[in-house]
Image (tube, rainbow, N blue to C red; front, side, top):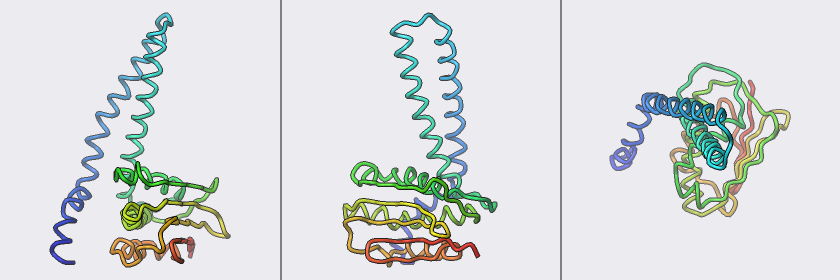
Length: 208
């Protein structure tokens, strides 16, 4: 790795090193805010209903929705560090990855994202490796989609075995020479067979 790239990755590596502590420090205040909102809603529910109380209850519900979203974001970051093998819901993993990578504001606001997930699609594999592999894959694909202003299409389906298909609609190809794409392939290859063609990538789960 050249020195310039290493310097660019240092802040991200530091953030990754501290992620569990950061998540812990965020989770505490969020839990307190959530409990306080619950108490306020309980108090208002016992008062005579009027327009003000009704409006406040609606606002509190909206705040609770945002708190849940923040908790989902923290869960998406935290799960990457879990090493214990267990059944995994691929849809949940991919949904959390989409939420996690919306930290890239151009990806969040400027890129069309289309998700089409099968009702049930699960695999048994080490969570940390699967999450890290998909994190690396998204790290390659998200900046590429932003740079090329392509739609980001992702779907899951069963074809005798679970399949994840990602298409960068509008691009001519995929960034297969990207370092993070290579990392993703190395991490996920024991569990998924990579099949790429043009701007479409298919990952077929290999249960053996």
